[in-house]
Length: 448
Image (cartoon, rainbow, N blue to C red; front, top):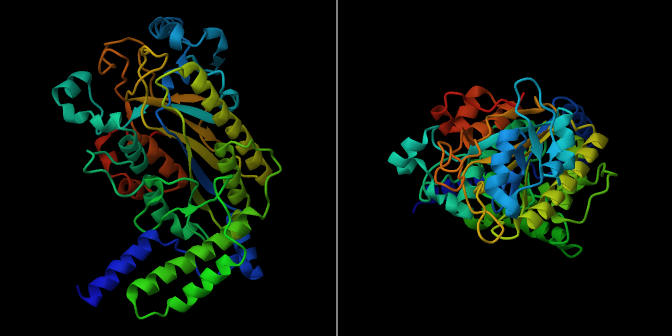
């Protein structure tokens, strides 16, 4: 292989995994800091993606309170899974909107919804085109069988691209969106993550890691300085591998210095719990509060909340997990109010898949397909349902089998394309990030 090919390969690698920031942090220069602060003060927007890993049970997260629908829900789920109607948190319903309620643990989410700062995206999932049950049964390739696999299902959600296990996308919708936002990110990349995931991999940008909670340990004092010195000396190496790795290391160190400065700029006074999810939200709130340090106008963040694979004892376990989620949401938006960003940031949920309406024999539910998700925050057209709730009937036209496996009536592609549009991507850019959007005549889910 020639040196020309080697160089091209390594430069391509650098662009994919580098953190795309200048080696000298702009915040260190007072003149630059003032300029960046002025830039960040106008038009800031950010998205925080929270993946509820394991497959959250949407049937007990968003519940129809229509008398007929609730009666069917209660009869099918029985004592093992049905939530008492009196415990469900009612949502305000406008003209033409269905009467809905939320799981009793979701007090902050319900409050935001009723205040117009949240919406429910109903029965959404990975589907290559909208179709009927008869069509799926006649053409089984329309049903992504990999929804039975947790990692493959998460990949479908995080990539925003559909296909078989051998055709899954190599980039995430967050990364591809960030590729278009690099010029509005100030002195750092626009993408940050507290967890591993393909969501944060773009063609030219990769997420900057945010360290939060007790799971992360700081390097010994002086270690960063030593690594930076080694990287600086090795950038001039005649060995292409050594010089490119050194350049990446130097950029990563510079980014982490900038990130540390941003996170310490105006830390929120709001109290956060010690849960890993809450601490992740706290770290993100710190980055957002320090947006004047980086000069960012657009940012994306990624979190994971594990523990939603409830095949057993679901009523107890889901209540614990959703309580942690709800507490974290409440603290996060309280912190955003401190920094004046509560109308400029939205939180959106993903999860592997929905779960069957019918319970199993262990007091839980099993892997299904369509699911309900939240979009939370200011700057959206909230207090509404985007899409339609499935009919609570086993074996009906919306149930792929006889267990309440809902056939999605909206695609993850439509939902995530709506998020990219909210961030300000043009229609052409949205089409580039989500090539499968062309399969859906209704276009992206409307968020504003």
